[in-house]
Length: 154
Image (tube, one colour):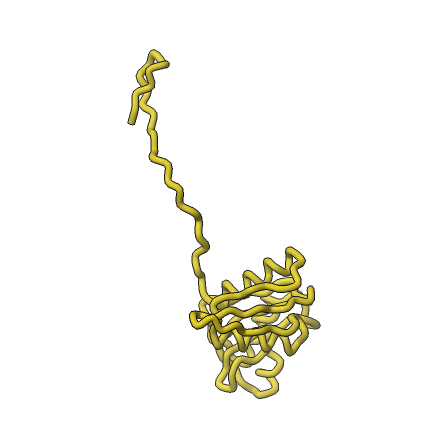
């Protein structure tokens, strides 16, 4: 603290030491960060996006998106650390996100989640993790199973 000599009233001015710290992004979750970087790259009109780190859940989620044509090919790059994925975008994603915590979803509850998350019943997909693996809501309905909700894309 330093007293200001220029003013007749003695005011105290706080001088803080300058810190040269850079702001870093907080890792919310591997899947959440992946979908957020894909969504941001899509909004910017990019053709490719680099996603890191790699996890089995991220790869399976991307396979579901690829199966429905929302993303193009993706390549897993092994850097002997956590790994990276290069995803080719094709401009079809409007929004994608993670549902946290991973709520339990029974087969009748899927309709409620669709109504809350997706803009229309005609397009968009919920992604569930089930005993049959990571599936979209239509495939889970065909296999007559519920599970935990991972996220959505449309």
